[in-house]
Image 1: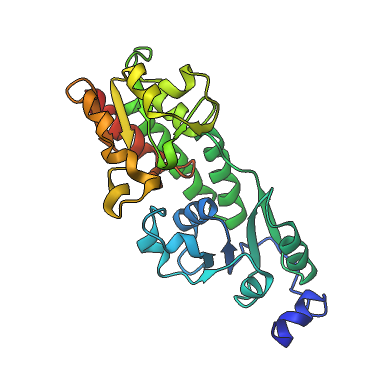
Image 2 (image 1 turned 45 degrees about the horizontal axis):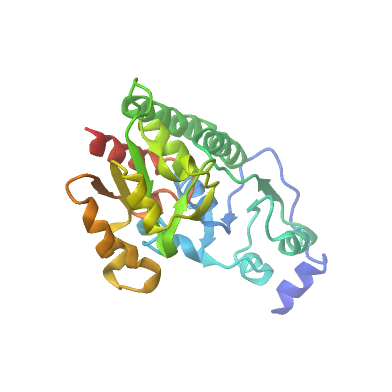
Length: 271
């Protein structure tokens, strides 16, 4: 820990109190908050994002994030960027938050968004903190318009199964469950009583006879036991009976504008 950082942590270096003007040096240390801030911040306003934002496998804005330094959720890494606002997940990094506050740096704690509606509330909260209310409202309106264009008027009917690494799936109450319902599908995992995120055995998939299989087709570029379901021989028995749609995981890790791409691909599969 550098001397400057140590003094800041001890409260001997106190940042100027936040005024009415928008913050000029903002940091986020959570992938989902990174994605929001990258969309909303003014040029040069965002001076740090989590290292995960730079990973194209899980970050939909990895290319844009490369222009912003990566930080870790550690007080030294954060204070080295001299922020005047740090945005945190409300339920994480309690010790780091305490030290950042002691250094006199304002923080914003926001709740985790687990649905499209919650993501829109989060967009508005972050936009307000950044002094970018108009940009936040435009982003929300764009999401809502695209969602209305993709959601079918008829009730869900076809059955879909989401297959993820380690035989994982998205059950009742998950973000993916919401996206499936909006796109006009019933969720096999939810109908089997699986809540949120659980496991879906291959045998249950075969017995359920879904109309659609949803998976990340790029998962087996480097085959491993965690992703072997992608090419599992047992699923070949569903050939000609079930459609298959590949949707990269990065579009559903966080609730937000990227979820519209999930709806778009599901809508195409349904047609």
